[in-house]
Image 1: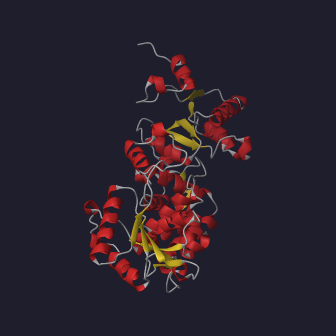
Image 2: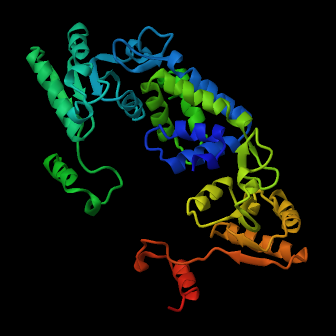
Image 3: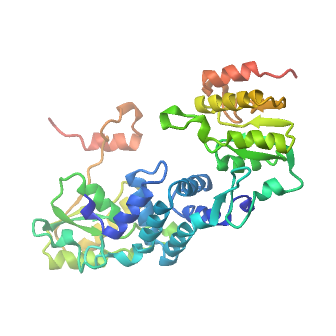
Length: 204
Length: 204
């Protein structure tokens, strides 16, 4: 079937198909849309992708994504941000999600994944040691474990909590609230979510 | 919010967001996945995208996608394909879809879109004149109107049919069968599909 499409198009399809959740049909649609758009769009995408790795790095302190030209995360260095409250997240994109709420004035620490023996990710591969050091260095008062509400996320949160305890760091450790998301009918909520919503109910 | 992410990453996100059906969150996921993969993957994607336009062109006869080095569609020139049967499709990717059935031994003619006044696509922009010429030149016996089963697809099929008639070309003109798709329960089929399934019922 590969001979049906021009090689140059098939090459783009093959590369797009490596992106997460992109199957062959979607990759075909992307590649064809790119071909249909003017050549400048292709050139811009090519250039942006080419410069991605040299322009982006992980912050050595928070492991958030930063400009390669920055020494440290600008958010971390921002004097208006409270270094004594640290939200611990799995991925750099989780930082963006929390920032969009405009409710958080603390700083972040990106673990760089979750403990997942199936995917070969051991606790040692996550940036937990660096978190412990930060807690000491910055005199952190609260760590918010903002990992996902998945089995791996829970396991990782528990692991980080234990590590903080083992290091003798007696600080406040919290976890994001669980319950009904906005706009979801009670009858459509799964029973685990509903269980959490009941357990975490608030007196009015 | 744009200052939250490194510029080089935001640039890739912005470009990915131009792809059809890709929103900002999906574009973020794609860009981050690319950053997490090794630099070679980015370089390969950049190279493939860069070479796309110079490596691909439209066949001047069938308007299918072909290698820029080819003069004409290899499928059209294939002596085992019947030039007297022409499947008329909207998009070049429709060719791939039909080829995958391995049921069609004729040739293709890509219209390059459908009549859609809302999107500013007039009949004159489609490759209909070229189809009429092909019908004469290749002594075509049957034209299969394989446009989509949408309002625009139907309108376009009707338009092509009239153009063939107006040109005095008395050849067989057919349309793809409509009815229940495989694996869909009757109770879940929409009523228009069911109406077509009834009208097109076959005696056993």
